[in-house]
Amino acid sequence: MTTTAPSATPTRTTESRSSWLLLILGGIAFFAGGALHPKGSDHGDKSEQLHSMLVDSLWYPAHTVMLLAMAGIAAALVILGRRTELPSGVARVVRVLAVVAVIGALGAVIHLFAATQSDAIEDGGTSFLVLVFTGVETVVNPLWGLAIATLAVVGGVTRTVGNRIVLALGLVGGLAFALATATIAFTDLFDPIFPVASLIGVWCVATGVVGLVRGR
Image 1 (cartoon, one colour):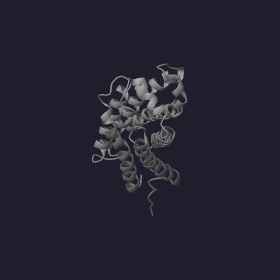
Image 2 (cartoon, rainbow, N blue to C red):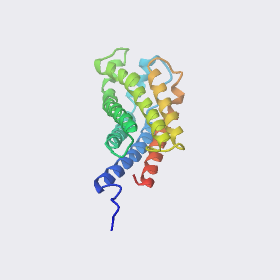
Image 3 (cartoon, helix red, strand yellow):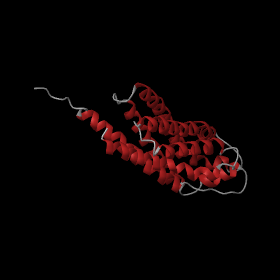
């Protein structure tokens, strides 16, 4: 008499479920953080517009939620990258994107505390933290958005992370986030597409649900 080995160990199944749940929670938090984010003033130069957001009472709540979102998404990708059942090529991509996601989460910490520098830029000045904040906004965040778009495509096409139906949500949302954040310090032209970036949150939730339903 022969027996069939189980397709997954209990530990692997628990890790898999954890990754999908973290992705769902991260997606919900990302959507909520975007909705809470201060709109800022349309008047004055970029420094004045940034100052108006930094002094807004919603800055800390919005960026605390966004930090939780990016940390949750990063944790989900780290766990996904450890899954031995992923095709080797997909696993390598996920691991690289997980590194980007972790850096993005660390950048979210800088964002959270950027409001402490509101006095420094009130009269057109700057500070070291403001310069780091600007670097995170225009370099790290665009890379994070591109990472989400890449994961949506690679995972969707291979049906290992999401599927071809939800692929477009992550692709469009990730590209919108990358473009809007890369240019925000220089022009207002692409600011209107920030709401489109909320599709990242929808993609995370949809992908997490797909993963839970598949049971892997």
